[in-house]
Image 1 (cartoon, rainbow, N blue to C red):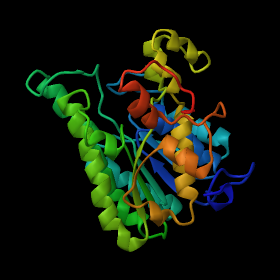
Image 2: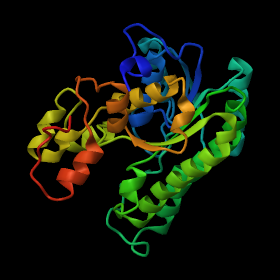
Image 3: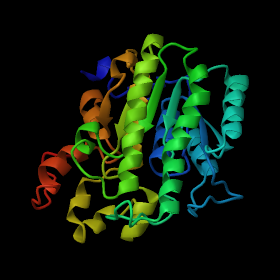
Image 4: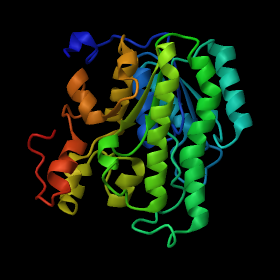
Length: 315
């Protein structure tokens, strides 16, 4: 597919002008990157989450939905921050009612809420893991997606060409054959994958698309903090973690969502499991540094087989 067939937009073109998007879990990381890139394409973006300048969620991170909305504005879109706890059906119902009152339509829904409220219990079995933490993870990372889809999709299908993006970690192909580091993490990612599959079946008759999308090794704020680097000097972390060289900024997966939303034949993506790197090859966009990291191909072909870190041909 060439750029003229839905690839990288010409400078200044606002392919999503007049479109309305809801990005849940938009305080930080992939959610923030997606919201900003949808704004850069001209969309009105409702950014939801629990962390505002006045109140932090249990994640206890400094990033806020207010900041994300301001970044959407700065990128050329219109950002609207709404504090919402997506475990609350009443709050989500009111959110969607507000979008309908104010905009009259919803064209893009990004379910990006994640349930890691504390340090992950990696490499622990179901019986070794904290049950309370595990169930909380499932509630935040799975139940929230179901609640949001329940209330938002009746509005989304009123307009032709709607797009639902279920955010996950790992492609269907990879996750089908790989244990994902702990029982609860594995179950959560599998559930979101199945949600995308079920929604694809249900949305097909409306000409809409449900897509399962994974970033690669994402340079989220928490990831950068954990490695003791910033977005400006992130490559310093490769001295200790060489495979981190394949990592990508949140803007990269944001551009993937914007490209999907701008595709005039978005229905062709219905039911697909895709990665940011795969979509970059198809649509022609790049990460902020001009590269096209293809993390999941790299993980399968280099990292998992235990080969020395070498990103040649992978970004």
